[in-house]
Image 1: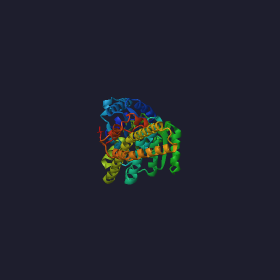
Image 2: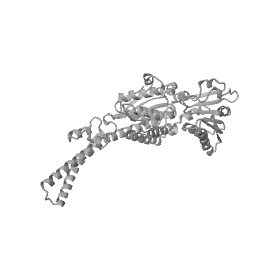
Image 3: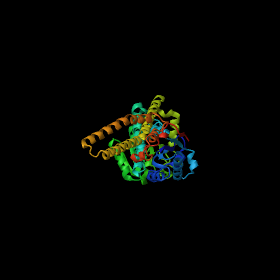
Image 4: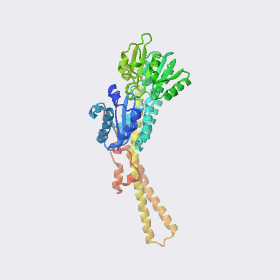
Length: 443
């Protein structure tokens, strides 16, 4: 068993393909169950954001897991598997661990150093746990991933330089102080947009959402920070837009929620619409309306490409170094853990041998004094424990330090342990013999 990471992002796919492959929040549970029910996937979580769709899975085999996951994602996207595969990047074993650590650290983001991705990984994990598709391996991986992401931001200051996708999109809207904003969508992205707008000195915010109560909740939160805010129903979207100078659309809906029927030409007061939905929240024809400027994820990607990502090589290199150190430590821990069940089985076998010999002693010397018999038993157990202590400690150290030797199997051969015994004692971790920093296929 080993980790397989499959995905497509702003680095490998255009916005149209990302739109088709995106998994709406309401369908995440269904897709997770479809993935787990395939032949080669035992644990799985799915990360779907505005610029990436990734699956992290524990698989029996590389090729089997790749085929199963590709088929499910292609079916979800309504595409042929090969068509979608051309946009994939694939990481296996140690390379998959390195990738997820890099993602959570913001090193693979459109805006290098942005911190929103850390919360998105946490949310994806929570969704997978709720769906029952996370087991011990993914649990340990994600907990380590979240810690690594926090460490990178704390020790490098990368987050201070890295803006979010929202802030980059809003930068295209120009000066925001004292202006009026409309946020369409009251989810996590909407809340982030509200926070960025407030920091920019926005004068007024309206929030539209399909569930009005959620819009009211976000508006109340904004008002608590001193910015006038109100909730509006989706039926009043056109009126709210007519009063706005800047719009942020981020609903996560399956299709566009803002069409040409919602906008009117703006000759004297142009409006900038930031479409951060995936799929798009704004119909393409809206951009053709006079006085309307649409900033979508493709625009943000171009801006970031031209600006170089807004970070420094030194901080990025430091962050990458932390990630590699953490990957090595994680894989060493996994290799050491992989030996533990066999060590436990060996100690259990030794205890059984001692018990059998003491029983033979009882049969041969039934008249032996009980106190003497107990002392003999303690002595024999101490001898066995001392003989096993050094080699069992050392074999864990060697397993952590070395990738090329299967120490668990060596123990089983040397002491004639039942091959099934370690799995009975404890379920082994994710395929130590595969845990090395390689195995990439970058689409």
